Length: 458
Image (cartoon, rainbow, N blue to C red; front, side, top):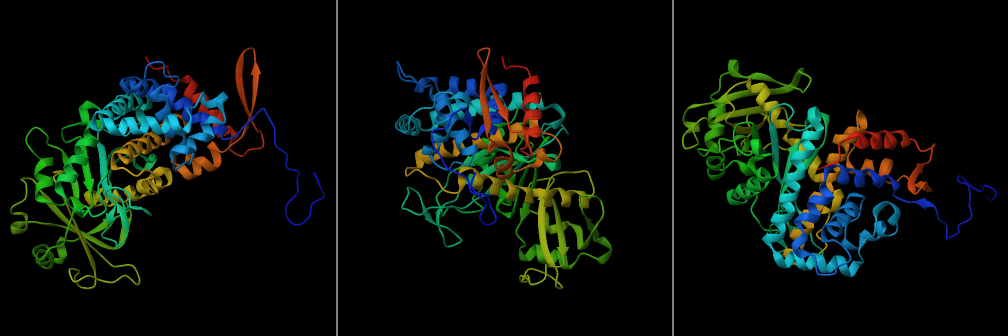
């Protein structure tokens, strides 16, 4: 080490070192894939696309790309970071081999997508059983949030178009299972759409919901135990009628556009009918009140619908809309939940804002852009992104506790996955030795121990 000059020490830089593994913390994701059976499930699902005498398994190739995306990559070539560490990630296919597989899956269309999604659904049910009290359905109800996301395109990719925000790109519709305050969330639907796709297209919401339900355990694919939650884009007659169709009977909590009829109904609500809104801890939300609307405003909507409106003082500097009243911002949502206080139902719907966090995490995990040109190829890319997000949700659910359980992908990468380790071979076994001075080594080793205690799949 040379003499220190300035604020940082100066060190000599040399190449050719060995015995050190970069991104060694990624072993947490590898062990998660192995313990959940995701690796074998994807491999079995993609068996029809394995060529005779092929060296690399298609399922392993696809999962390698998903691991690279989970570690921060945003294109197919980023699988090279795994290829450099075969002691941890095994043999990784070359870039041309990866590209050929993506082209083959894209050419297969819905057949390949169905195979990948079926494998994910099978593993998800097993993971939730392993997680027990930490599973999203531990409380008896599953909440699925639907929301659109704009993905910009900087070239003339297939189906890229001008968006409603005057940008250019695509407008996928995503679905996420909410893990509640004790966790993050996991993806269950990704519907690729052109950039000019409408926000409130009922057919797209129905398709996205079908994709999401197919990812849930069978007991949650119908009935009131599953709640579909959307913003006002889902507040259409067709979508609510589909959710409540006989034999489906799903619960819903969807935002509603403030129409003139709703606005006039709000003006007629007496002051005594307004209840103070509440915060998650039960305390009163300052400057916010809720009330339930009835009468003619419910005509034409499915039986059992309830309209709940909230009025609230706008944030400083916020502009009022013409549908607001008495200087207060109005928002409205519909639900078919019969019991409970309207303040609790309003709080439940307000927590839909967590979907924005899920979208932010998805953008940081391969959804910042769609790297391929053809729509069929980018549909496969969306499945890769969901696989990466699944791993980033399942690993904390099964292996982390306390505050680390709530860490989002960027923090997981910075603190856990980026940790380097020394690889040692003893008695024909490989060992990773993480640096004792790394602040989060204990988190990594404790997580590995928890994964080791889980039963092996099958």
